[in-house]
Every structure is written in structure tokens, then in C-alpha cells.
Image (cartoon, rainbow, N blue to C red; front, side):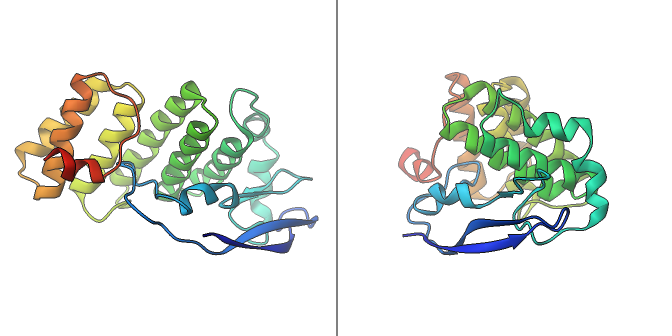
Amino acid sequence: MTTLQDEIKVCAICGNVSNHKEILSTKALGSSDLDARPPEPERSSITYWIQRCPVCGYCAPDLARGDTEMANIIESDPYKAQLRDSEKPNLANSFLCWSMILEDEAQFRIAGWTVVKASWACDDAGNDQAARQCRKRAVVLLQTAREKGQWFADNASTEEAIIVDLLRRSSEFDEALKICDDRLQKRPDKLIHDILVYQKELIRNGDTKRHAASEITDHA
């Protein structure tokens, strides 16, 4: 069960006051997806993971946090275009706008995960094309994070397993398969080994659907 409460937020950018729901508590019961999306009921609480100011369009996990320097991004044409992108769900656009702010601040790790969340919002809306676009963008940001020394998972093997899933689900099968083979040659731990072997089977089948980590045990 997810518990919510109403919160009045003062936008850190424009000072507008608006009401938003925040999560007091939630649970994750079951197995996460291979891209780390949590199970229910936390899964469905995604609507409350991001807030949007109804006046200036500032998007952030907490509208009360931010600084006026962010206004330069929020007032830019690319940000405004993303905010109103009719080809993506509003929730996904909010995540993508927040990722633009994070990228401008060189916070590539958080920006990448934020775009992954945008892909989940697209999944929920049944917008497969937008979800693929988000996952491709997430891969770029997360790979940049690695290059900058911003680790986005516990270790390199886990990071590559996540990237493989993002690539597979965006139909980038050749690149996903290459990463699988390269990492398997380095003899990762059993869990990552089994995940990558399973991913190779999904890739061979042209499977772009979501799969839960629990399937690894069932498949092994």
C-alpha cells in the first residue's frame, strides 16, 4: 500500500504556490524488472515521483528545492518544447525536463536514471515508440556517467546488465549482444552471468518486452 499526503509547495524558481501529493510510505512486493523498475505497489506510485509547477513549468522531485540559475534552462526553447511534447505522456515530459536540468549541471548519473523513469511512464501509457526513444537517450547519459566516474549501480557488471536491458528494449540488439559477450568473457558473478545469458536468449528471439529478475531463477 502507498500512503500519500497533500503538500503545499512554493516553486523555487517562480514562487508560485501549488498543491501536490507526496509519498509518505510505500512497499515493493516481489521482483524488480531487469531495468530495476520496482514491483507493485511502489511501481504505480511513479505519478508522484516528479512535480511540475503549473506556472513556470519547473519539473523536479521537489518543487521547493532549486535555484534561480535553473531559470535559464527552464526558459530555453528546448525545455519548453520538451514540456509540451505531444508525442510523449505528460509524466514522461516532466521526467525528461528534470533530466535536462540535471544534464546541464553535469549530473549524468541522476539524469540517466530520470530518463529511465520517463521510459517507464511511456510504457504505462502504451507508447512504445516514445519508450524506445527514452531508453536510447538513457543509455547515452548512463554511458557518459560511467566515463565521468559517476557510477550508477553497485559495480561495472551490474551497470552493463542494466544497459543491455535498455538496449534490448529499444531494439538495439547488436549493441546489446556485444556488451553481453564482452562482459561474459570477463567471468562476472553468477547472478550477472545468468542475467546476461537470459538476455542473449531474449535478443535472439527479438524480444523487446519487460521481464522481471525473478525469471532468471525460473529460467536457470
